[in-house]
Image (cartoon, rainbow, N blue to C red; front, top):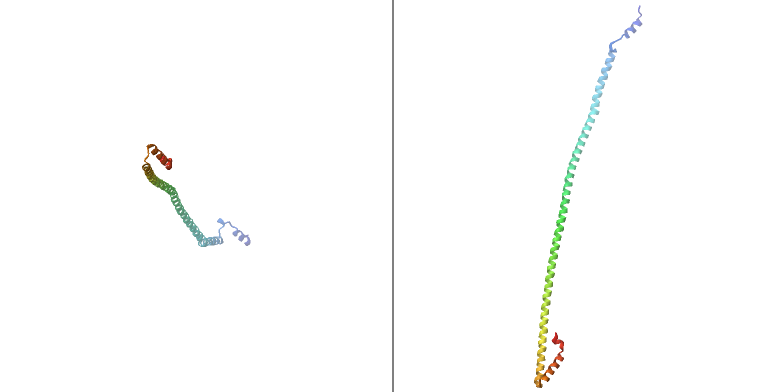
Length: 184
């Protein structure tokens, strides 16, 4: 005989395949639906904004890299231009210095030529003045000689004397005029 309490216990205790019952299946289905709904909610509220944030960040970084590359190219172009200008500046400085040297040499030559011309004019003027002085002195000497000759002639005529007296008169007149007049 079987007792009813024991039968119920043995039927409940009967082994089942994987121990699956309706409650377990319902709980599992609800859990899967809840996880799927949670995944959709997280995807909409968390994953999409995170993806959008990451995509914006990637675009920003790519833009900054492109901007940096452009700036680097511009900087290298400016560097090349400045280096070219620096080399040109050195050439221009050399050209300016050479032009200044040439101009200084031309000025030097012009000044020397002007100085030589001025010296030649001064020498020519001095020669002319010396000639004038010589002529003036020669005229003065001639006038003195004429005056001496007139004085001698006057003395000779007035004294009509012999040759000894005449030589004495000439010597006397020469002493009066002075020997320096005749030597110069």
